[in-house]
Structure formats: C-alpha cells, structure tokens
Length: 142
Image 1 (cartoon, rainbow, N blue to C red):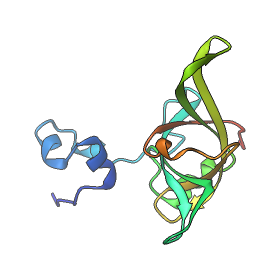
Image 2 (image 1 turned 90 degrees about the horizontal axis):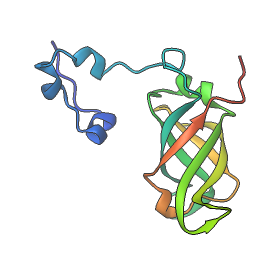
Image 3 (image 1 turned 45 degrees about the horizontal axis):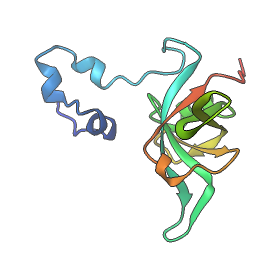
C-alpha cells in the first residue's frame, strides 16, 4: 500500500494514515464525499479562510470558504448560489437572544481545490477567519 503525504484536511483534524491503519479505517480517511452521498439535514459545514486578497491589498467584500468534503472545482459547482450563514454570539441581547447571523451566498469557485468565493450582506469581520459557517442546500437547482 502506498503512503500519501498528509492532506490539509488531515492536518486540521489530526487524523493521519498511521493512526488509522491499525483500526482498518484507512479507506474512509481519503474518501471525499460528493453532495449526493451525504446525509442531508439541509446544511453542510464550512470554514472561513479569509478575504479575497492580492499580495498586499485585501478585498473584504468577498470571503473565501472551504466547504467540508469538497475537494475540487467540479464538486464546488453544486454549491453555487447556495445560502451561507455565519452564526456568532454577541454580548448584548437583542429581542431576547445573543445569537446573531450574517447571511451570504456562494458566488463562484476559487482555484482548483474546492474553495469557493462568497459575498455576505455585511462584510465578515476578521475575527471570523477560521470560524465555522453553515451552507444551506437552498435554493435548489434540481
């Protein structure tokens, strides 16, 4: 069996091939799921990577997201137009809740690795980098 170097996803989760070999789960470790394979509960998880940027300038009106299980540009096509929710907790209570949401939409793929660009109603704050987002499965094109 050939050994592959750790992928970025494995470094994030701390799961390596050596850890999985003795449990017999190595085939599951590298399987990327397509949107049709997943259990649908109406949303998928993603992570905010940062703003669109050049070497020195940032473009905060566009955010880059990595959606869980999306590894290439073809898989990212499914998510174009889907709604994204960045959910966070604030100090002050408004209408009985400290939980707030910034809504956005996936606009296009970014590169060949499954990263997507998205635009939010108000720009995401920098402390959202690395935070989780929820990708809703609506509007549907099916």
